[in-house]
Image 1 (tube, rainbow, N blue to C red):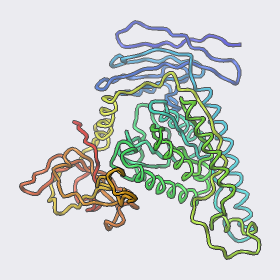
Image 2 (spheres, rainbow, N blue to C red):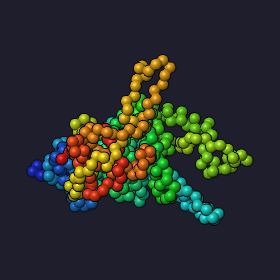
Image 3 (cartoon, helix red, strand yellow):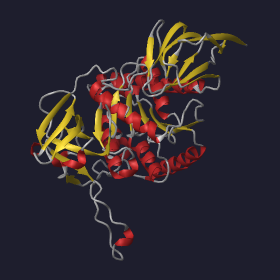
Image 4 (cartoon, rainbow, N blue to C red):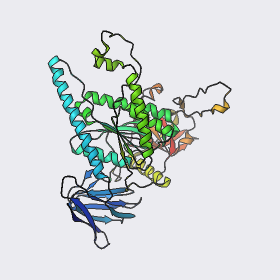
Length: 489
């Protein structure tokens, strides 16, 4: 049986509004969500008075107030709640009983079971290793690839799954392959970080020390080969973290794929799934993509069954090779596990974002990187000689079309070629990644320490004025150029 509760919304100068709030009296709870859209430049506050409510999987405490600005959020309750809305009125505000939260909770429960199974397996291996005087690596928890077209709700689902995992005591790795907005750091990056605390509502999904590789583009279609290369670097880091920490391995990972799913984008999606060795793939809002991915993964699995094992696989199971222990290893990725494919409809709360909205979000994200969400940081504007800084761009040369080449000739274009940037004038209003690389030949393998923003270039004096997170010398003198401009206050 279902009973009707009430969600009371009290909004600024507007008279009290009462919205129906449906809950269930048994274990399979069903609720409603209040959806609000707040414009850029406006701020709406939300305060929980009674009951329970969560925003993207993060539960609000009683009397807690959060601020929303330039955001589209869904406030969900399992049992009903009283909320007070203050500040600016949201541009759009409505309640809906059509919610995907029960489905997302079921997915979380399945992932939770896999995490516990992985931890139990690791514990058993550790006991066996101790008895033999050795130590076994931790069993891998679920690695979830979240895929779907643009504006299908991928980032939202990632937040929900991450928050639910953290609330259960795990520390999952989050890998963001959607470089357009930069949820972990500045836009234009492929980045990863361990999520150790709930992601607060209205806050950026940011950590103190994300591992970031600067692609310098906002769309993977501009540099697909570079995206592949950096995806592999992130996957290597994920494997290294899992190998060192049993709990981290069991916690698994959540991978947010980009929204480009056609042609080359689909190839990048498959590459990410295989590189991270994902065992769960969630498709949002596209039956076509679900069908394509199902067929492609089935084909990959068939290929995996016939290929020889890698060296690491032979070391893990020497008996599988019989008496032949000295065999030349096959240079290939480790075997892709069996992938559980899940198909979810696009949430009714997912909103199509315009080009202008994306540009504003990108500028806001860059502003938050330097100044903080509440303008609590104090970046430094500094001037340096252009000669003291070396800027490189990856794949800067243009590729000649095949029709322009002689018959039978192949293009020698190297998409990963590093080209020095001589014209500082073209770098105005762009981000530069400050690389950890000690030498230029290691730029593609090294993450970035942070970013600077080019404010002005005086070509006559040969100087550049840039904004840095702090004053003083930069962590390195080798910089990677971005290919997009950002304007922010």
